[in-house]
Length: 86
Image 1 (cartoon, rainbow, N blue to C red):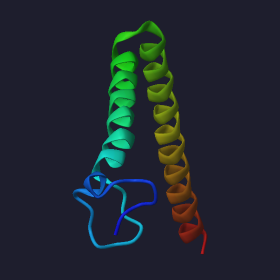
Image 2: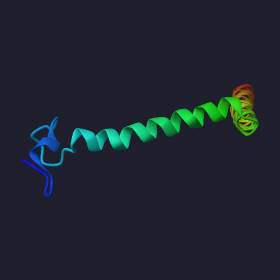
Image 3: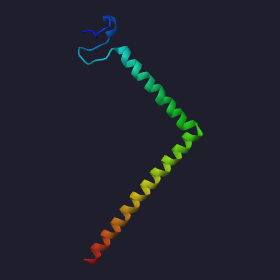
């Protein structure tokens, strides 16, 4: 099967599915996304703004881990105190 307005050659690499995209169209979608994500990672680890973002992410995760451990510790202590009382 061929997409409307396209030649048979442009559908090379298609499966028999009706909704399949031509291989060229798939590459035009995937490669720019890969380039954008690689550029974003490069900026994240090399620019001053990216490094500050990493610092904020690390501090936020650290605070989250601390709060979870703090809450678990106090829940265990409360449970032990309740067992001793009864």
